Length: 383
Image 1 (tube, rainbow, N blue to C red):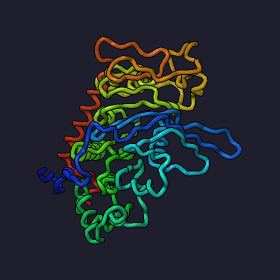
Image 2 (image 1 turned 30 degrees about the vertical axis):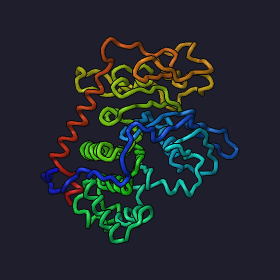
Image 3 (image 1 turned 45 degrees about the horizontal axis):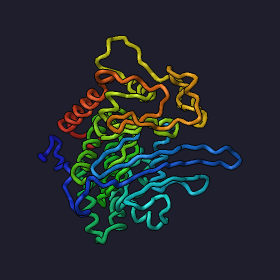
Image 4 (image 1 turned 30 degrees about the horizontal axis):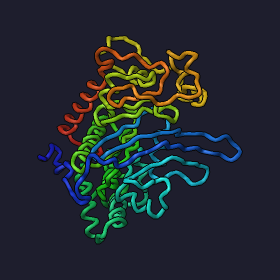
């Protein structure tokens, strides 16, 4: 890849075959009926995740979408074994190449994390250790999981930062997180996650705190990771633009359950659950007439029914009826393109695409990425 206008060399992820050949038809991670319940002493139990199931293959990006409080991050933390042991009950299965991560001994799970499983967290400032240089935080992953000398680990860490688009990586290795811009901190987190070329990468809203230009650069980096290394990725986000530009399959979560699951184009073209329909309708449109009001979903995510009483979204749904309050509301297939929905009165399927948000969002992401490549780094990265 040619040098950009800022002089940053070769941002493309180099294809490396340390893991061996990738079978893209293999189901790498299969989550089955995952349930997470928090129990406070003297309080009522709270079920944050209620029967979530999904699967991801090598080279595939599976999105988990929903508002704050829907259970997305708790799902990822449970899969990675990062929830506290006290006051939390986890059940179900998270099968990684046939091994159940939920019942795996702590030592074996620790060996997998970093080497084969990795996670990029939402806030890089709180995820990185503020009193340890960035270089030390990158090299410790290599030293923990690879038979490598300290000097070789430092060279590899410098190469990782360079390939993640951080200028002058040799100097950045000696700096502390507070000396880096937000975009560089996020790239440093990605470099740590990529250090051992993981087979599975979970990204928990990795672009939330970034401006649009840096967001596009980070998404482009993640795309290269999936394409070049065949890494399986679970992208957790509330940003439908990220979903449109990155994900292959999408799971929409509400109140701890998946309410709609479909391939990306099918979901954007023919949303069937009223919550998904509301999420898409709430996106501001550049082609909307001047003065047209926004269309937010009424209420808040706290306005829910228990799933044992019916549809949790019913208190906020404009189409709710008496029969929405039923005891059992399964996730049912619609008979086309692996599309499933948990809704008594799903939206009617339009003759043509119900929304053009997919194309618009993908165009915005792609266009911003192109502009980002041309414009280079943010102000903090020019220091």
